[in-house]
Image (tube, rainbow, N blue to C red; front, side, top):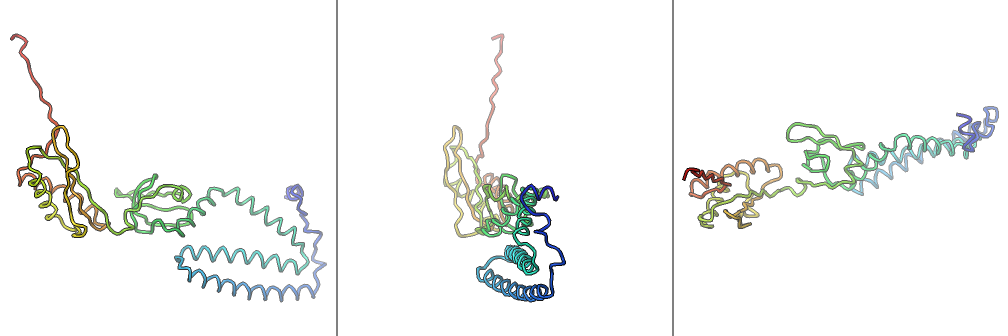
Length: 278
């Protein structure tokens, strides 16, 4: 360690400091300085806490910010008190710098995740309880911390995504606006009148619970196929009710088509058998 510090140009014995150079006057001055620094630290922390509260920052990022400020202030207190005791501050600062560099290189990925976590906590692209989709998977956010974000999928899987990846990736938040649109695509025969198909679809909508009346449900013609007409049924629901609307509505459309005599087309395969003797 001594050779390593010497190679970096840092005096490992802190400038020849020894306890014999510490006098009562220096101890008294250091004690007074320590008391003043502690009072100043409390004042700065109090002011910082009030400023962060006025900035309306959430509890979690505010806690991390206060912890970082406190750590920096304590380093400053140590340096100031060390200077009063006669310890060479330049060598001490250099030693702190070397240790900080070594730690940052050792935990580079962790620091990247922490930086991503701070970005997520400050920008708030999603919150706990939101359903999001990312390149790493889709699910409900169950926990956000500085290192990673946890998602719970529909099939009961727990996905842990590093914040460095999540903060740099595309995020689709299905919960943020409070409501979602359900779109179901169906096909019907050209022989079925469009108005009849519309009545059948709206009948299925009326039989489905948890559909919002505003915006109003609608059925539109979306495409003319080779053997069928394509329709889209569009309704809105609360974000948390998406699954409770999608699947029952899909079932009710099939039932309504049968009631209104609408043929739901599908691909056919015609096989012609030729008599070779003929």
